[in-house]
Image (cartoon, rainbow over all chains, first blue to last red; front, side, top):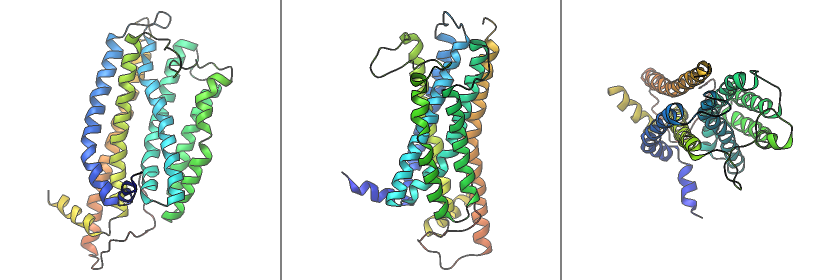
Length: 249
Length: 62
């Protein structure tokens, strides 16, 4: 186990510099993959024999839904690490990730509703998966609201970590809801054990979109964490030097 | 498009909008943050600038 990595992670300046290096790669890969995946999904994938063209919403709905849940899981891991090892970077991660997670959850809910209207005949239904995803959105908002309400940074860090962990039980509920309950939302297209129910011409652009969305998410996250670092470390020499440098240009 | 074209474009339109907003939000925040920190430093150059972080009240960032 390489503990030096963890020690470095504890240094905001190290993280800031690393983030600077990786940011353009994540951003450009993300954009290219998202554009490629979207064009592929919109123009080249074959239409569904039952749903026709509306199924193309899948290329936005599934990746954003996956990321909405993934982001929360990452925040939960950060919360545990933060509570046990008390590393500032974990709190910065949670602060940075929450608004991004909220945005993706909103997008998943919106595209889902828009897809539901022609497919199911309704924009919304209070089935397990949809309700749990809505709850996820409220959890993200809750974390953001809690942080802005608490002035003391350490208290805000601990409180939001606890809130994240209390809400984490929602994630397996979202994931398994379509198996446990009789829901309107269809079961998973992809499982680890079975062949996908879709042909490759349909799921390849989906894979591209999922990877693209993860890359773009990483870029957004790095941008936000850098801002957090600048704010929190504003009294340090290296930040003041950086500000002076930025103001010159 | 079988009449469902509107739904597809609505979804992708919302997608582009949300992704653009989520990109520009931290970009704008960074600009205003740098400006604000530079101003604060000009008004009150802290001769005892430390390498230890300091918790300050009322700083909200989205």
